[in-house]
Image 1 (cartoon, rainbow, N blue to C red):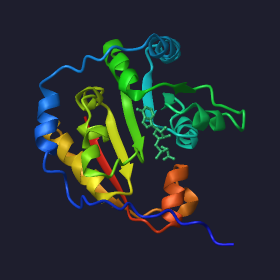
Image 2: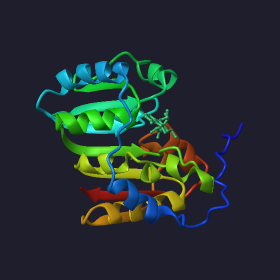
Image 3: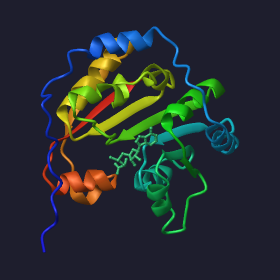
Length: 220
Ligand SMILES: C[S@@+](CC[C@H](N)C(=O)[O-])C[C@H]1O[C@@H](n2cnc3c(N)ncnc32)[C@H](O)[C@@H]1O
């Protein structure tokens, strides 16, 4: 039986959104002030103790955490935080029960976590965003990370930011938003990856489905 292919992203939006620059600049000049729920603060306290003063690798939207395990192995001297808002996905991350000492999973919303990390001044060495939800309808621009009011906070966390997506428009917009937000160089690549070295389950699914994959990188 063949592998079920993942459909390509279909959208009436085929190029960067015309309101992107206006939105990015608007959020850059305003402080995001939604209140942070107590459960997010409590989850952060545990992570804060785990991190201590060490350098951190953040895997935001880690899903089932496969990439977090790989990162923890690849960077044994760092603390790796795998974060996802879905408890169902995170539960599957504990399936093999053999978690490296430098890895912690958190169930929380990045919108809250990134603000708490900023306040606590964590030393972020790398920040991975593997295949964020694309929200492909034009009206969903503000749900994409670069169209969300949290974007300036995410940028301010610093470190090497690495975002991967299978939607070219998302990569283009993410790159533009970064360029508008900071004076750092932003590089976008088309990836040539092999299914055997896929870093995440979504990446594996997209490679098997022969999607073109994109990566946007900036040393913030
Ligand atoms: C398309 S999946 C990618 C999962 C994984 N990175 C991979 O590549 O296999 C996007 C993930 O982001 C998570 N997510 C979306 N919005 C989030 C948020 N605001 N905070 C934390 N996780 C979020 C979802 O629960 C989902 O697991």
